[in-house]
Every structure is written in C-alpha cells, then in structure tokens.
Amino acid sequence: MRTLQRISPLGLLAVLALAGCRQDMHDQPRFKPLARSDFYADLRSARAPVEGTVARGQLHEDRYFYTGKMGDAPGDYLPFAVNEEVLERGRERFNIYCSPCHSQLGDGNGVIVQRGFRRPPSYHTERLRKAPLGYFFDVMTNGFGAMPEYASQIPARDRWDIVAYIRALQLSQNAAADDVPAGQHVPSPAPVFRGDPGSGATLPEIQSTSDGNEKEPK
Image 1 (cartoon, one colour):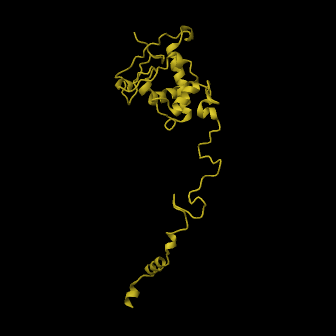
Image 2: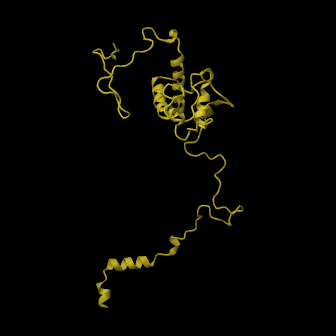
C-alpha cells in the first residue's frame, strides 16, 4: 500500500497510457514498396501513374527548347534573343563543362586531350561552322561518340547559352576585317595586369587608365 502511495499521479497516468497502446499503430493496413498484393489482378501493390501524368518540372511543352529539333532535324535558331548576359553565361558554363576537352578556343586541344584523352573535332572546321545550332544542343543533351550526355548536369537554358557562345567562338576565329566595328583593334590588345597574375581561385586585376579604360600594352 505504501508503494502505491509513493507513485505520483503523473507516473500512474503514463503507465496507463502505455498500457493502452496497441500493435495496430505499427502494423497499419498499407502496402509496402514492391510487395505482393492479392487485391490486384497483376499481383503488384505498386500502381502505374495515371496516363498522362507529368512529373513536377518535366512539362516540356516547348519541344524545340528541350530538343533543339524541328521534327527530326536540328533547327538553326536560338529560342530566345542573344545579348551580352547570354554570352557571358555561355562562356562561363563552356569553360566549366566543355573547355577541358574542347579548350577555351574550341579547337579540340583541351587539357584532358593533352593527357591522352581522345581529341574532339575543332569547332572551326567547315562542317561544324555550317552545323545548325540545334545540332550542338542535341549533342550536349544526348551525347555523341566518346562525348557523354550533359542533360543531367547542365539545364536546358544553360545548354542554349553555351550554343550561343560556341557560335561566337566560331565567328571570333573566322571573322573578316569587315566584321570588326570601326575603331577596334585587330587583334585586340592583350590586357595589362597589375601585380601578380590571378590563380585558379582568383581573377587578375587589370590595370586601368585615369579615364577608366583598360591600359594597352606598350
């Protein structure tokens, strides 16, 4: 009797609550993943999605934007206007994902190739200069030859930005004097750096003149 008196009302309540728990809370009427089910004719508990179901973020209504093709053939236009921001983004993504093989000039002599990897074709060959823009997008999306697909690593918009930059690279290496704006040097002068050159983690400081323009080398 004295033992019962020593048990606090709160402790007694907890003991009664635990005694009221049932195993049904653990063994609920549900299907386990890939478990057999006698309820359905095919004996599978996992059911196929409703026909026409689209995963979130996978509603690719603009077919050209996500494939680069008009029907079965690659198209030859960009699905958005090209500006400096597009080319800068394309340059950044190209240098990250493409330049290790293709080099920053797009001539196929990247750092991996210099170490024995198979050399890709130069973007400046006649065939690739005439290739439609959708061709480059399709190759990045699905891969080609020794090149793997990059759709899982590079979003569709970034792939198009890279396409725009590839075309700019091609123009830069095959431009005529008439294509250069008046007053611009051909070739453009190399920048003059202030202090130590940058490393792989830092950018170099470009020496500027008093009027804010880059200083040309002597």
